[in-house]
Length: 81
Image 1 (tube, one colour):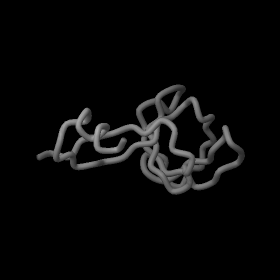
Image 2 (cartoon, rainbow, N blue to C red; image 1 turned 180 degrees about the horizontal axis):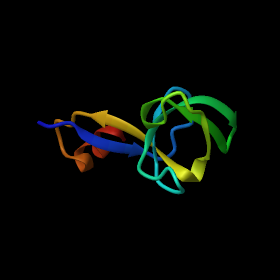
Image 3 (spheres, one colour; image 1 turned 90 degrees about the horizontal axis):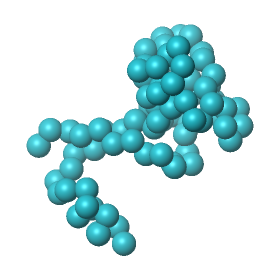
Image 4 (cartoon, one colour; image 1 turned 90 degrees about the vertical axis):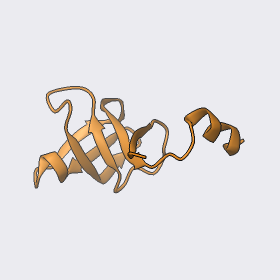
């Protein structure tokens, strides 16, 4: 199977995670959370940002992960319960 992209909306551990910017002038770019400034503000660099460090509010991005799924998402939810 091909890897599928999943977006984790409520993962509390953002440091080191790859993010996808969904709003603003950097919309569509990927980067890595390098610093957590507070619960709603994060500093991102790497990826599409290179050495540039940009600050984002939590509502401006999604956490981006690859996962190989061997069963459908509704089956995964059943196994998690």
